[in-house]
Image (tube, rainbow, N blue to C red; front, side, top):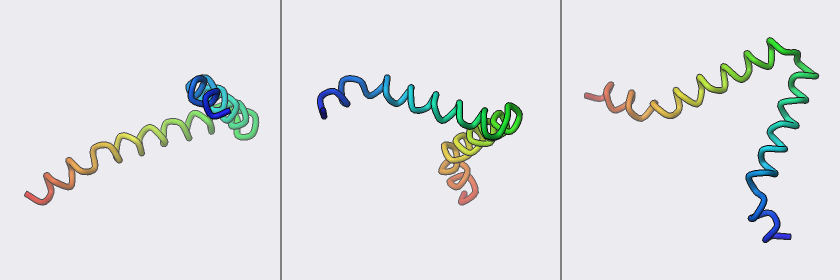
Amino acid sequence: MNKFLQKHFSELSGALSGLLLAFCFLGLGFFKTVFVIVMLICGLIIGHYWPVVKRLMNK
């Protein structure tokens, strides 16, 4: 089973992501789901650049 998971990890994670996205569209609706995705991307960008901003503020 462990070899199966290692071999097909990308397919399984993609399928689970699609399933989660489908439940969000069904449960929340289109615009709320798009809003959640946009906020998630904004948080990802802020989290990625936060050390750079923190370093610039300390100078």
